[in-house]
Image (cartoon, rainbow, N blue to C red):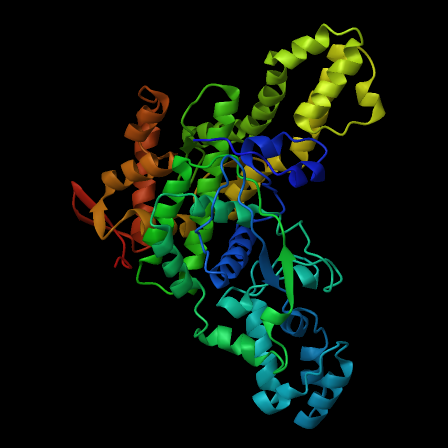
Length: 508
């Protein structure tokens, strides 16, 4: 496991190289797990066209060097997400001809959409198709500008870049913040048959024969081709390590899900949830490594019941501990600067404060305000730590709680708090990826602990804490509630008092 050199370009983009050095450049709370999947597909599609999908080369201890391209897809984005008069025109006007004429006059666009009249005939038919795309859009409930709203990725023609308010501008980095690039790098550095995985992704997730992908093409002008209107991204994200077990575990889950007897559109949801879970586990492990305790992560799941339980309290404390862990890692990373020989050389120099300031600027690519370099040595170092902590709390510190909520790993209740408690979609994803055909319930509990450090029952709690839990009864009830949930979802069958099986109805 080698630590790779970070590109100097990335270091110049930030005011302090700390979060990025620990986990990579970059994890960002505004990029939700769904947007990570979209950005990943954009990178993968481009590299597939170059014949290099998941087959990247690391140059010695340096980083990969490649450019990828993302379509703008301007006409279809305007048609679906910047078309406010469509439904009103349909309601107010009686004749189909009047509707077409008024709408074409109202569309404030560089594109002439008159071709849609011959393709769809009825104006109402066009409206229904656009409404379907609007209602199935990724995170349709979120209020974002139209240039940062995304079609569900039915196929390659539904994948495009995140852009600022002006669609002709450069890529925005708020929602495509490089998390998808990190996911791509993790899969490309795994040991799990990368070429085979690339074939599966292409077949299942980038199938241009999908009827809704073809419908997206039908909305696009004849003279417009998405691959003629591209944005080039010249530098890929920074992922600090060349090999890690987290990359292999992630790739293994992608292989298993893509092998299921399910369509690509159906698989995207569990892929999104489990990819984000693996990335959260990676962040927790890296944090433990920086802090120096090298613990295995643990995530105590409370299966919702009719009243508050002791497991809920344990789970809430567990979530808070995991959430704060990244901040502890940043401070440990900063504090190690005092162990370097250059620190002691700076302390022994005649202009001590200036030498220490220069050392910290060089080590962390720090771009301090003038006030941060005033005072004695300890004051300067304290200013650095305060700045690192403040910067971390703005974005990276929020990732764990926000992603856990987005993937259905956590639950919040007003006046009570937030704790780890899975929703039905998250539980379905676990069954899809861990159960080959069917397996005994207690084996399922062991597998989700071994793979994802998810603690549900007494045995898993004992393994996680190194001792039996003080409230075994609460964990037994927790196990029973999970069994009932899975049975309600049609994913578990009890054959006798001693034999319950978890079943995957979509196993190959």
